[in-house]
Image (cartoon, rainbow, N blue to C red; front, side, top):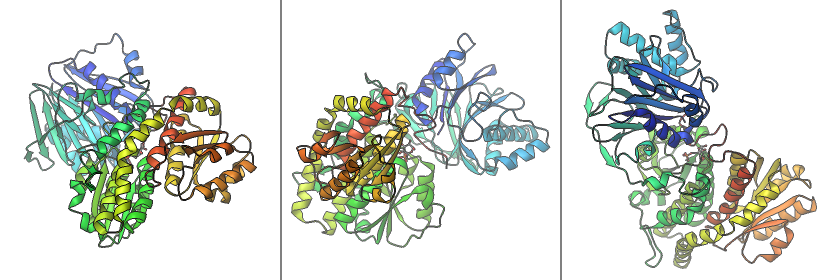
Length: 611
Ligand code: G6P
């Protein structure tokens, strides 16, 4: 939520910042702004996406070697020019951008109002900024000192970057709960919510930790804690290539990421799965294997698409490992004083590794003594760091706001964990274990096969793009795929779509069925197949439009349907990695056909760092 960028060094700051903001737009795109320091501070900001800001400031004085920029996902105050970041302090000498929420801003605002401050925006950010300025003025101290004092009073989550007219070339940054990366160049520094804004300039980065404050000059980076003690920055090398964050010929990141899935699943399995030797090696899981095997319960915590991956994993773990699994929305779990017993294992799933609810849910469970395993995509992210162990999904940067390749990589990792635990525990027989390893190994090839049908799915998109509603139904392992298919469609095309367990449909949604309602069944060949075909008959009898994802060669089911999308046969445990692909494509092509901004759907953000 909200992307932040900063630069200080010999280059022109504005182009570096604007390019960085475009890379971070997936985090929010309600409004955009930059503050540049060249003598005084110049602040340019506007409602809308980065390109709109660029257009609005053509011809303005943009010369500066230090600056900060922000792309916003609105929390406090509607998206408009006034509420856009950066905010300027009452004196105009300080500028600040912020990602997060200051929960006690109302109280701080009251204090400042009594002192005679007035506010130009409705944001919590402007309150924090003036609170800092007030401390700086009254204590006659440096900005760094004022920030430190202010943050001791702040309740909430933040990354803040500040510029001070009185200290040219210097950016002050601080973090708690939201991500901040500092890129180290030669005589220059870059800042970002993630590493993408700095990738073409440097591969050396420092991930700032909670309660740390950084003083950044072109040739100096000082890291301190809030107690003013200096900390040695831990410099890490980035393992991402620039092509990974560019569209490289695709119209949208979402399409690129859908088509990357054969490779991303392969990358996820590589070095871990040895189908010939019959081994699964996952170093971050290995040492907790005993605890997982003997767990009373596995609790899976996640949000959004990651939650859907958790639902598939619930079925897989219960089947293969015979362990009781519960899947929780992080936002619900964290607030209801959950019962965590000794011997419970938590698996937190997150693409970004920064989702605020998941992060706090982990902390809640950790405080109660649970073992936390993270299944995370972004290396070095907060969830990866607070987990005891876990496994990265290695899907590479996912930029399209609607998650695609992260989902299939999560499924691959979770399946490997379940297989490993089942094998160690002895709850799976050797033959089935080897069969599943072999089948898993073949999944990337089968995904490539599904992608070959993209033109067919594009034609279906044309046919169904005018629908106002859609129902997605699945059973067993494919139930969560139905939920995910519906989520993709509503995110990308704004068509109302509902996912439901196919049999449960008789207890409500069937009332919606008429000759106009497309009903998308996920009906690949599995142990529920006959049952779901009966559910299809029930829809057909009521004249609903039947569309189905089916297995190759299933002519009987195909004959029932108005349209089908075919995937290769696979063991039912692994089928979701295939059956979800046509649904991702269908949502994508419908979104494009309707003229929607598929990479940046309205109101959404990729990394939800506020509750
Ligand atoms: C947002 C994104 C979704 C994502 C969800 C959870 O809603 O738009 O695509 O599934 O957050 O994010 P996480 O990074 O924790 O997987």
